[in-house]
Image (tube, rainbow, N blue to C red; front, top):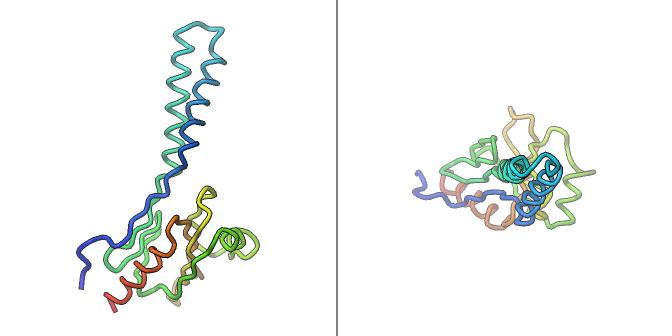
Length: 154
């Protein structure tokens, strides 16, 4: 049975403050170029702001989706049949799994500006990855979507 709609989709966008910082990068570059005249100043303002905005947008571009019988997290794509238990991580527990509890073989899709996460066990014996660590703003909805996809394709 193929699901007709995407039960879960989230883009890990950068926080709004990063866009303000992008503008400040442009202003800083404009001030550096101020001694060279007005045209370089304007070029530095526009170019610096645009370059910083592209970096912020690219860093916030990964998506987490549950589509059909697959979990797609950034560049990783796994069938839900290869996934085990899910564990919702609050801010403190997520920090622990990012640091001293982390396994070097795990797949981490983390963004420091997102405090909560979901840890999903990988049960495929041929996959050396023990678990997925996924930064998400809505870990309960993601866990529910994985469970629903697993039940729909069982």
